[in-house]
Image (cartoon, rainbow, N blue to C red; front, side, top):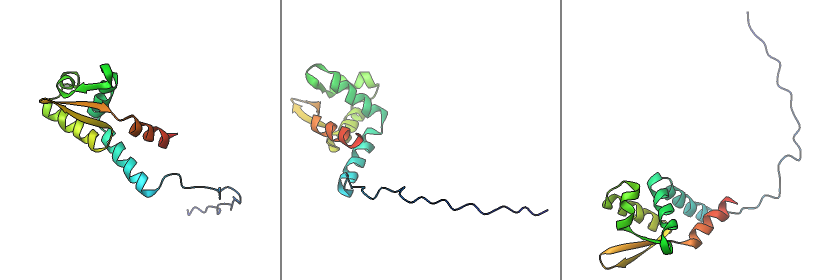
Length: 115
């Protein structure tokens, strides 16, 4: 036996779309933010950011970051480079060690996009 279905009713939706939408994020800004979110998309990197944030003076030596995240120094350095390339941390060489600090302006940009 063949089934027949009634056509769906047409629902008028006049006024449902907001004509006053304004672009709040340009394509270039969106591309930049996507790179940042990609950098943040790794658990180790989020841990590193949290460790740096909670460190005395708001900065940490790469030598102090390896044990808490349970990764080797080269792996931690790689993750920190990704964060630095995204502009989330800044690096300062002191002797043979690199010290990292958060870039508050960059973190504020992320917060602004999400508000």
